[in-house]
Image (cartoon, rainbow over all chains, first blue to last red; front, side, top):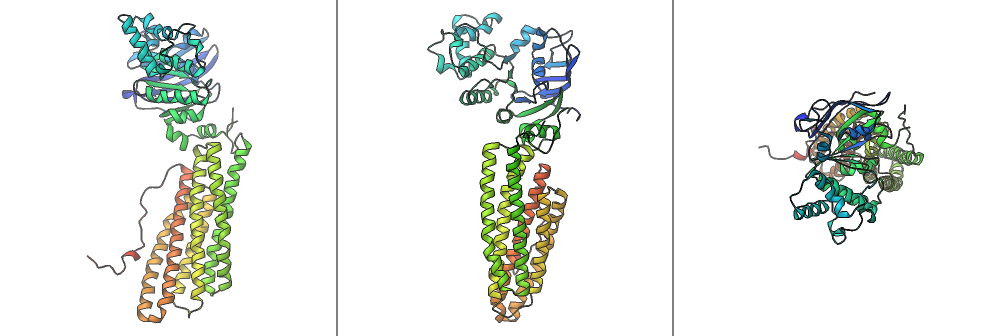
Amino acid sequence: MPEAPTQNVAAESKMCARDVKVHYGEKLALKGVNLDFRPNEVTALIGPSGCGKSTFLRCLNRMNDTIGVASVTGQVTLDNDELYGANALDPVLLRMRVGMVFQKPNPFPKSIYDNVAFGPRIHGLYRDNDHLDQIVETALEKAGLWHEVKDRLYEKGTGISGGQQQRLCIARAIAVSPEVILMDEPCSALDPIATAKVEELIDELRENFTIVIVTHSMQQAARVSQRTAFFHLGDLVEVGDTEQIFTAPAQQLTQGYITGRFG
Amino acid sequence: MPTIGDQHIVKSYDEELKRLHDSLARMAGLAEAQLHKSVEALEKRDSDLAGQVMNADHEIDEIEHFINEQTVRVLALRAPVADDLRQVISALKVAGDIERIADHAANAAKRSLVLNQMPPVAPMRSLVRMGKLVAELLGEVLNAYLTHDAERALAVRSRDQEVDDLYSSLFREILTYMMEDARTITSCSHLMFIAKNIERVGDHATNIAEQTYFVATGRSLNDQRPKRDTSSFEGAVQE
């Protein structure tokens, strides 16, 4: 197994992971990952099923806390704030700063408006109703959904198309002005047109957010990300500029996986 | 523990890449033979052989056409990445180089027909020597390309200077002959063009060497190779 790459970009990183290990009961699912995420960049995490990429993604906003048998060790920081340990950020505050979009669009069974207003409401991020209206509009605008839903804001969020639902979930995530957005296969349930819209959106969101995306589609990783990290059997095998990973990967294992010679 | 083989999970992808490789190998073999024959036709003043070279050129053109189509197909349908991508892109470029090499060989053969109708001129010996050197280098570089041997390719690339040196001295030799005996001007002019054809083959061989390095390592050679062909300055006023 090649040595896990180390990076020396801590100073300019938005999030840093150091020697992150995850156990599911006895099983070691993530074997000590060091990876930094630079601001205003999209980092794609790729690798075969069971390689630990989603497990790692979930470490970045403590989603593994909800799995009883999972235990996380190592250090993760957001700017200079610790995610784990004695001085850890409050998870509620953390998840406001690190938003998440899931594989299947999961809008709440509420109106489109209420879906987007949900975060600002529970975190008390608005002054008055006009301000909340404005937050909802801006979030839908940024998610590229405003013009499609502005006349039906009070219809059910579950009643729009799959692609629109996923962009609604992105609007819901950005309504609380997070710093980092995690995406776990956000397009795997979408058709190519909806996928293209989400990918275009990811590219636009990059200006304001740091984005980490798990994807099974290598072409998607190539299209949307600036950096790509390849995971295999719980190890981070290689991380580099996306262009380098897809034209001349340094590791044989990476090459085998992305060219489809793995098995 | 998964293993990484040479084979893709999708077998038909392997077959398409192999077809591309085999076509290049065939094209390379033909072009190499064309150059050998055209040099031999010059040396032995063999017009029949020169005719054969001229007639065989279309076969190489057809293979290039096939490789172009096949490359577009693989790019469109397979979206190759990493070493596969490098191999496909280089196939497109190398096929272009080989096609030009074959054109130069055919051109040299065509001029040799004219030369054979005139009395032999002495610089032909140097021209043949240069032709044999280039043919040898071409054979080397094509083997290096087909086996992805970067080291062997670099060795060929560094020897292109020998070709440039021979070309420069041949250029001066031909000029001297023409000045001494104006009756040789026609044949010497043809000789000069043939020399240029062969020198160009050397340049294409260098391109192929660079593609080999790219395929094998993923890096491009961008350091400037010193050019030793000084014939472009011949007769220029020294400052």
